[in-house]
Amino acid sequence: MEIDLLSKLNDIIDSIPFLVSEIGIVGVLIGIIIIDLLPIKFNRNFLYLFALIGVVADIIYLGWFAEATTSKLMLFTVNNDNWSIKIRILEDFCAVLLYLHLFFNKKTESDTQEHLSGQSEWVVLTLGMLLGAHFLAVANDFIIAILAVELISLPSYLLTAFNNNKISSEASIRYFLYGAIATAITIYGASILFGLTTAIDLQGIALYGKSYSVLFISASVLITIGFLFKLGAFPMHIWVPDVYQAAPIEAVAYFSTLPKIAATVFLYRFFFESEIITNPYINYFILIAALLSMFIGNLSGLLQQSMRRLMAYASIAGAGFILIATLNIQDISTNALYYYLVTYVIGIYAIFLFIGEVEKQFNSDKLDTIIGIGWTSSSRFWGIGIVLSVMSLIGLPPLAGFTAKLLIFSSLWELYIMNSDNIYLIAMGLGLFNTAIALAYYIKIPFNMYKRNSKKELQMSLPIAIMISILGASLFILFIVPSILI
Image (cartoon, rainbow, N blue to C red):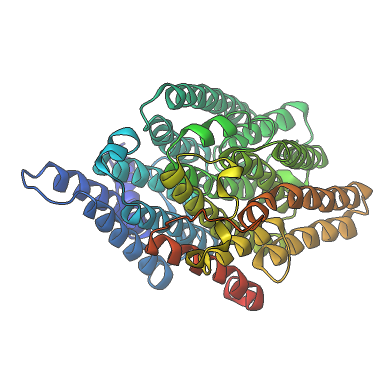
């Protein structure tokens, strides 16, 4: 018994080099807490800068020094392969954009009391989410996956209520209740799979010889539904509009990217490693959920006059495209998924940076608030960045969003060739139709910006304007040179 326990402890010690990234994030988090408790006066905004430096250091480590391997810990395994390294770099990139947004988003004291307070709390909660996203990216079994989801979710509920008003508190409670239901569904599905396969790791589940049994299919569907909550996809999408409307804009931008990436990666690994996606019933379930997410998101987006809610429904539709990319376990789908996630993060962040500046000056996120602001001289560059970001999210050339959707549709076409199943052709047609619907509501943002010559001017802070311009330009560069990512 003692020898066995000693070997387990040695496994943990041997695994530490493969968890340097996560240990580093914990170190930054603890450092933030200690610095904040020091009895000295300093500008607390520099806590964002401290966190930013830590995350950039993590990107450098993952990009140049991390080794790809699978490491076994006492109770579970983490898959530290090249795929998870790339995904964690993308997750860190989301955090970099967040801390830049927080650092440069200067507010008056009254604004701070009403909207944002406690810089250390912001950093600790968002770093906690990043840590959970990292673990979900490397998760190879359901113990670490479920714990990682909770590590992402709990700070999310608190950040939703950070505005400290009735609307945000109610949204936070609803978010928490839906999250609790999603977690319960996931655990129930995982427990059924464990009862059937006696395995919690994905490779062990793949060895189960009765993948067409009703219980196996039901358990797999339940697990998938639970993770669709973090994606904001049908049928776990109901929380999205309320949370996007009520949470601080910086948190909304973070919610719309980081949890989506983490949940997508584990779902794809679950489908690929356990080989359950080869089961046609599960494949059809994912396809139906994807198409319904697109239609619900896009059709609802047509009716919105609030930019926050418009982007919420666009996020639901975007989750549908992400799900389609998980249907194919060939290399083309892996490339399509990663490329789409990168372009999605860039486009979404640019739009939310813009919405945040509009709200800060006009105290409104309504579309009629931005009428004519694109004609002013100050908007010459960031206005182009917004137009490029919107066009990319729609999927129009010559921008990276077009290439991303082209890759996704190509993976669907490959599925049709391999299976000779007309349902994939129908899905392609419906996906293209949804792209046209998305054009109708996404275009509202640049259309109102350049609707008519107006004296209204948006006094955007220079760093935020530069960020939007760079993000917009990068979408064009990624279209010209897609080999940067794939």
